[in-house]
Image 1 (cartoon, rainbow, N blue to C red):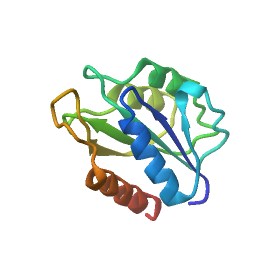
Image 2 (cartoon, rainbow, N blue to C red):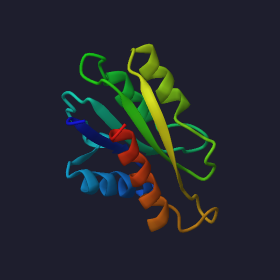
Image 3 (tube, one colour):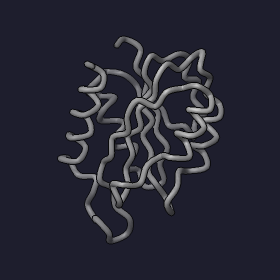
Image 4 (spheres, rainbow, N blue to C red):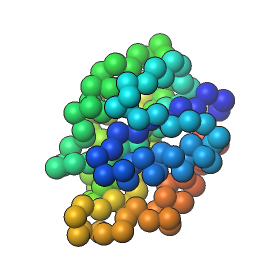
Length: 138
């Protein structure tokens, strides 16, 4: 897969760490959605973000609304959360309504205050990178 892009939305910098590690592994740039990046086209778009108060960041929802099926072929979420069962359901719904398939969601252990403190750690991030590379090589 040639045209892979990575974006992230973060409050705690955890998702940035994950996105930057994947970007380094793929030798591409990762963009903060807060900078309103122009993604252009992507065969596969990785979206790294956390779950805050049980849901996605409003800026991530806004970003998802801006995406176009003509430009984005597939999406994979890299989700950092305290509970690995929480996902980017609201973003998934927006993308699927636009006809943009979400092909996978990789959960990376996150932390909040003292819950799961120290996560994501190097091992968590390495696991997320390995899972991402498997998706790319499918």
